[in-house]
Image (cartoon, rainbow, N blue to C red; front, side):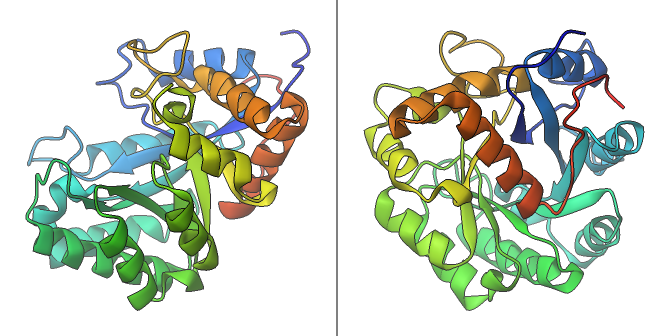
Length: 280
């Protein structure tokens, strides 16, 4: 493999086989070829799993970390779509997994009032409980929020989420939300949405936010940036999101890549191999 000109991390990606039939190894190879030397892989209980094994996705990402310990780190959570499934047994299993050394964060967790696949009261209760889990295991939180800005911020504040901090994944709010999130010890992770023409408010935040509080992600297999919009997204494409943010901020892509890589490592208390030689 030749020298990599720019090194960066994908701060949030879903790599399960149901999204990538060719397997995660091939996806990681393509990411590495593009300069993506680190990935935060998400494992969600009930994410496409049967009720017989609702934790297939978390176990999948834990296996990835064990096989690629300096390329991949994991976050484990329960999506708000499945908040109605949160109960003491699920909570206990998540807590046991979150304590493991392979896991760098609890998430994604949060609120989704756009789809309302789980009742809102159940979403709020699960979110609060899982913030408590993150505080118990002393690991940061990866927040999913959609159409629920006020409740998201209020719960983060009332449940003392600032004690562990984390990221607002797939940031899609305005500057007022961002300012409060930053004050609560959260960083902002931008997906391909920031490249879309109708995302001026998000672009404003990406141009304004402190450089040491910005991360980039794909949320693969979703939200591919141009020139891949409408196609399956994958970690290699995070380069395009990074370059767009660099243009918004008027800085070199290389310096923006270095900053976001360092921010990802700091927030997730991990160190990726920057040499870029093989999967490790």
